[in-house]
Length: 568
Image 1 (tube, rainbow, N blue to C red):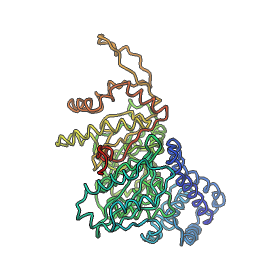
Image 2 (cartoon, rainbow, N blue to C red):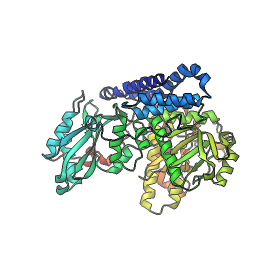
Image 3 (cartoon, one colour):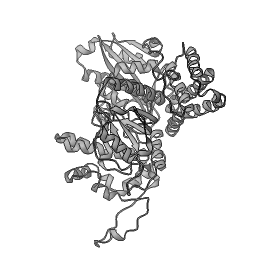
């Protein structure tokens, strides 16, 4: 039976790897719609593989369900098979999922599961087979030529000498001659990172003992040739690239733990679970998150409490002030204005999970029977949960069990940010980014629905992210209309409105509250209030047009930074 479970995992991983391994071909052939479909298929693999394994073994397990000795021995036999397994950490998570499904997620016990990992991963064991190293003691151009010569694409580059000239100029503009002289080597991960319409070479430069990110995004031009769009060397840019609101990368590797270890050295502020998730191993990311969460509970004493901000109409949201996530529980009953069901809410969150989030919609992770120590729950929060979400709460003497919840990265609600911020430049940036956020979500074929600014958050990097999904839908499901032009003050009262009708001219009245912020949003993004713009986006989406949504500022691109071209 242990062999059956491991076989199921390995079949799942091979399936996952086949989809991931075809990413370069999809990129080279500019099959962007296929890339999105592959991303959705890859997300669905885990649950499909899990269901198949559980179905195969369920009947034979029935006599043993109450026999702990059997479960202890099963874990022991499974662990023996993982001795030299290259994905042992993922295989442990798969085992947990099988046991969890068999017990209907009612039992969390490290004796029969891998609540804690069986061993720590020792980084560096296969580093040489995963990293290309380049001597940087020669000229910058020689080093860049060596790097680009190692990575092969079937498409020609539009103008490689020009692109390398851009890279060299950027390095000389960003670093002093002394700093550049200290760079002795460059390390680039062998697997190319693919996402959306871009390929990324990801690595670092070593300047004495200091490591500097080195990321080359590669894009298509209109003629089907490749070009290097920019060079990213700031940790902030790398952090945004691996942000929690972006789709998962396609990275073809048999050693994900080593890739994560390399990335974590570059991004020490990113937790391991965040990096696993960014590579598409979201189920294992959930496992690593839970372990990190349990460790944090042991090292902290603060109480869970309601999250800051305006109370939601659909979700009860709470947090642990010392920890960087929020917990969202669907309420038993919704406000009168919400004509939706509990299943509709789940479907919306699933849609976002499967969709391209374009860096503007927070990723969420779904848990069942999530256990919290009762003594860590504030009385006010417990009272609120029992009042608004009683059907999702089970109480024991020592625990509160939440039968279904979502976990999401913690952000500052935009309405709170705008109330508290005094820097006019930051306020201006936030309003501008709010408009960009809505536009980019729409271009990705999602109508956000409830666009009140309380439904957006702002990250530590100043990016505006949407996180309220209970009214989202595809763009084609809405009819964007003009308001009637009439001198009759009662014209709106007699307007015939269908359930799917939307009037963008009214958006300015409710996206943000204060008059000067309304005016600023309208000044910066007048298109949002124009139904013609929304219909145009609908048409572009219907034609299959996918806009470039870059994970770095437009001003960072070489074509914007150096409009006159590289020197020489």
